[in-house]
Image 1 (cartoon, rainbow, N blue to C red):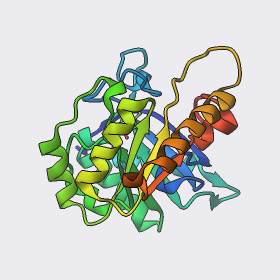
Image 2: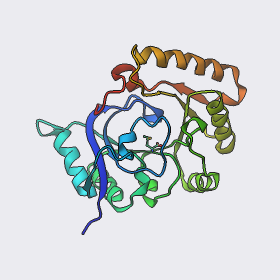
Image 3: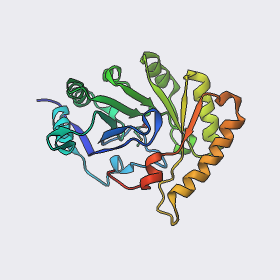
Image 4: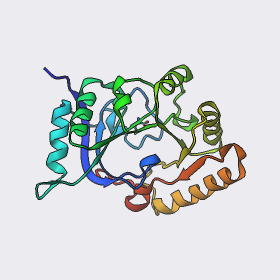
Length: 238
Ligand code: MET
């Protein structure tokens, strides 16, 4: 029987809010389970035990995407984003999903932290590796990250930046892998604090812009806000 992975949510079409695919219309598939537990994780429900996922094969995930992403019999998307949790914990179900997507002419994006390798990474069209900075409380295993990045012909790098220490970490990542562009995503504390999330994010973005503007080693950086958080705050399922 085909292997299954826990899936926490499947939704869309929506607009991708961060990284190299920012602004792209896409469907989201969010797997459950993570080898990390980032202090500020915006999707902690995928790993903290508060919600239960549904075990699905790649074929089941594809069927669900088609079911919710079809309008008047016409597919209303040409891109899917696989995120989590860490989708790199799973092999067959995701490999199968990618096969279905590609057979339909649909491109595939992946968000992962670069802590685990899967052979299907080589079939992903937009692969974002997002190593986690000190504010996450996670420690990067550089040997593993090096080995993953060495095997990838094409990928993009994104680092979330909350504070000075995170910015220093982003500089280390940049110096180590020398990407042509380094995506910096301004930290979103995901709090339900009163007041506008957009306003807080834009204030932090200005701080990040000033840092990038003043730092020669960051000439290739693209500091961006989470576009979806500006428009929709931290709403789920959009
Ligand atoms: N764990 C993946 C990443 O680090 C997915 C997003 S984090 C909720 O990119």
